[in-house]
Amino acid sequence: MKLLSRQEEIVLLSIRKLEEDASGITIREHISKITGKYWSIGAIYVPLDRLIEKGYIEFYFKDIYNKKGGRKKRFYKVTSEGQEALEDFLKLQKSVWVGFPGYAAD
Image (cartoon, rainbow, N blue to C red; front, side):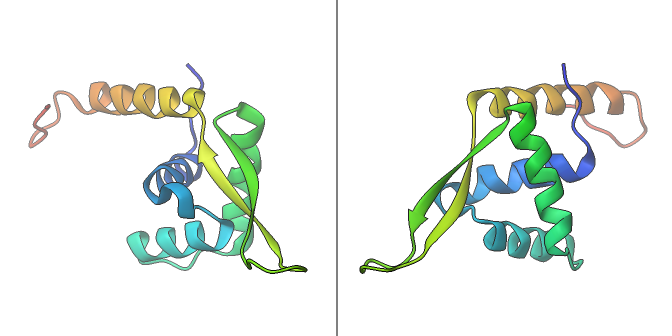
């Protein structure tokens, strides 16, 4: 099992949650909203690059304007390896928390 950093975990979960709308900007907005903290562009793109290298996400381009000369925007999606990594990471977290007072395992 390859472990995820906390930033990688948050970014990967955000991509999974946003599905077809997971661009760098929307990922950053989502993470800032759920954490209540400002995330710089670098704080998003560094983990994105690492997740691509690990094979947990991939990117594709989509036209954001439906006209000639329109811009293309990069979007991200979780791969099957990325989904497996999330499931493994959740199992690991649950096993680490077992035995702590107030923790109720599913």
